[in-house]
Image (cartoon, rainbow, N blue to C red; front, side, top):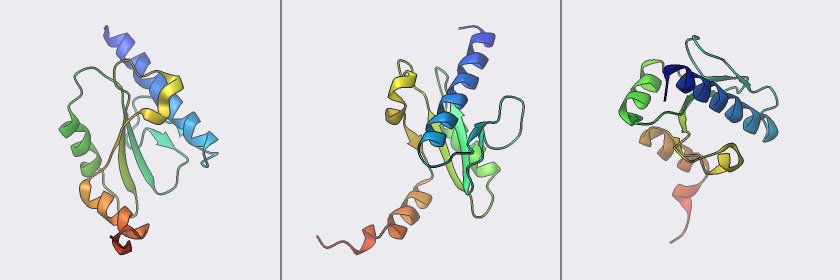
Length: 116
């Protein structure tokens, strides 16, 4: 895949994520485009979204990118478009977040108080 194709796939993926969010409760979600520092999707208060859509993705690098730009009060999440995942199956795209953030979300949702 050429560099131009990778850039196009990345931008298209950002746009797909933004449109999905806009249709699901974040009406102001927009793709940030390329060459901009920070979140790949804007208009989603409280979220720092990194969209990755490339073969040979290094997950550690994506998580480091989120950690390096961490801002208090923002939920860091990396949305991954894996090979073979098209736009019609975006609900199946994986979303990664730091485990500590995941545990805090579970607690906030009351999962720490469920009876066995």
